[in-house]
Image (cartoon, rainbow over all chains, first blue to last red; front, side, top):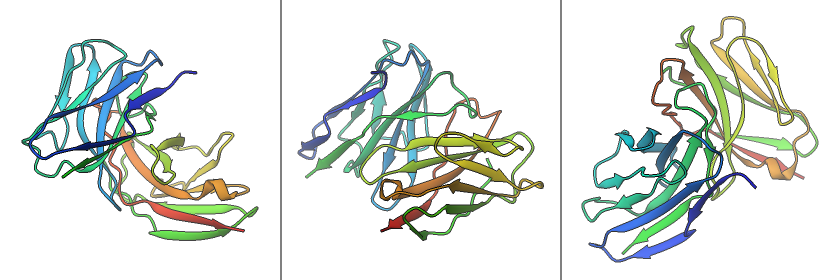
Length: 114
Length: 112
């Protein structure tokens, strides 16, 4: 089945630790995205990548880092510098970058930092 | 990208049509209307999009007014599985990064 996988579904970490969230797609899509969702809120863009070895900051990139070494993979690291890391993290991809192509979302990772 | 306004919640009886409105009065000519939905604790799911003409697919129909200032998503025969938050999003052809701006959406409850 083609799609986007995110792992793990639930993740617990202690404050001060970096944590990396996995996102893999087998849709052969060029563009990939990371969003954050807080309870009762819409999604906010953290980072996006239009092509391998290239990525750009979204609206709330502070405290996060990404890499795009392979077309199918776009991991997100939540660093200790992120002040409020507890949230639902969603990865998405689209066939090409741009505002007129639908995005396909993964199931999400719920991160809790205590 | 233009801002959208949606009612915060709606109810619909199972088997009836669900009509979800969206206002986008500042939409410009190069902006598409997109609809996504998010079932609780899952990732959003693309439903449909359009520019000027009405669109229909296996999930829903999208009706866009002639002046393009508002649109309606129609789920023709709502089921309990359609209970979700529905997001109306406007996105420009010049949006090179592909960022989607998700507002609060409409929480649709389909009741038996």
